[in-house]
Image (cartoon, rainbow, N blue to C red; front, side, top):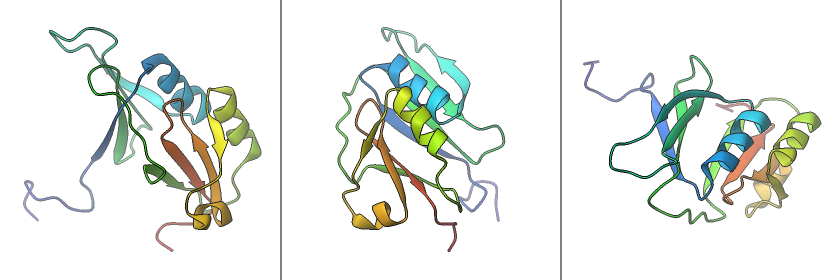
Length: 134
């Protein structure tokens, strides 16, 4: 496969606007355990800027944008993590302590197969007991 083609090893960036960059960062770092990979203070853009979060070596990262577009999450804006095991209660507790809120899933499938927690902007994180692929 040529280097210019997209494929299974292509890195993915998920970008989301946030109304409060510090609150969103706390949720995903202190709550979920992601690390700060990079901070960007774009020229000609007022603070707070952008923060990239992820796990070292993962093929994806989450970009939180703290300026520009206001967040408008819907019940179907999901970030699903397939844990392949029971959802640890201490993880859910950390997410809530870090500014998240437990939520009933819009699709009952996710209540049956995981736990849904809204981040401070209302975007939904699903911790699934399923394994991917399943």
